[in-house]
Length: 283
DNA sequence: AGGGGTACCTGCGGGC
DNA sequence: TGCCCGCAGGTACCCC
Image (cartoon, rainbow, N blue to C red; front, side, top):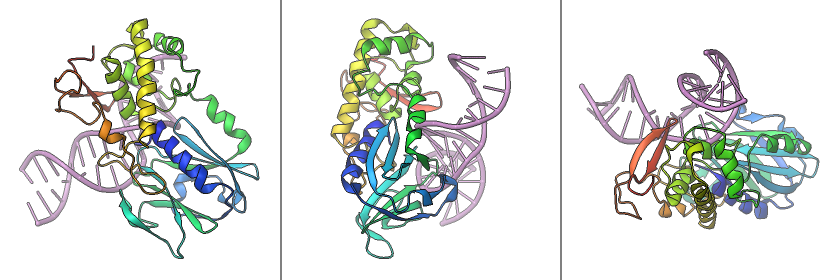
């Protein structure tokens, strides 16, 4: 699922691919996922591609901005336009090689290229806003974990305010922005902390370890171009998968050996979500 | 106000 | 074989 490293990978690719291109046409195939008027961005040129938490934004020269949330199964695929549609060199999850596919909900036409928004589960969305409204989105979200503002002190302050399980807190976008299930599980393993622990009970030493672990796993996710595990939809705009799934520490590794102590990785349910950890070395 | 529960949606695995 | 049920999962929204 697209979390901070996946969305940032998409952003970096799209920034190069879309630079200076003019949007000539928008096909909205599933109206409920598109909010606002697509006509407001037609004829405008791409000015900037940005990310905040798991939200991706495309600023246009006319003062309008497209924002996307990929939720669980959203995909953005950028490919040269050969007329009616696009044939990819390799199949992508839930869409195959021919685009638009059944899961394609919006098609953005640029000079000689198309950007496809696909989403199997239809939880994701696209919205047209004024570029001056970007701040309203940012204000509702917590600290960016890969920014210099994300210090051990700030994390200590965040965890001190709630008794909820630490894993739930890591995934709370209003507190820390961009961490989802994959990186929450792996960061807690890296820090040696049990995901069920009450946030406010963490010691200063544990908070420091956790801060470093979050930065480490997110940076590693980014380095490998995100995570494209089995049954996950995420791919880069080119259609290529990421590589972090090969480096999962505990995520989706129930029953396997713990890479640190050799114990067995367990799965429990926390806040309705699959939670993976090693009882042997996460205390 | 923090926190718990539920809906949104589709494909798939398990059970019979 | 094939159908049906239940489940996964990020976030918004409702309610206590």
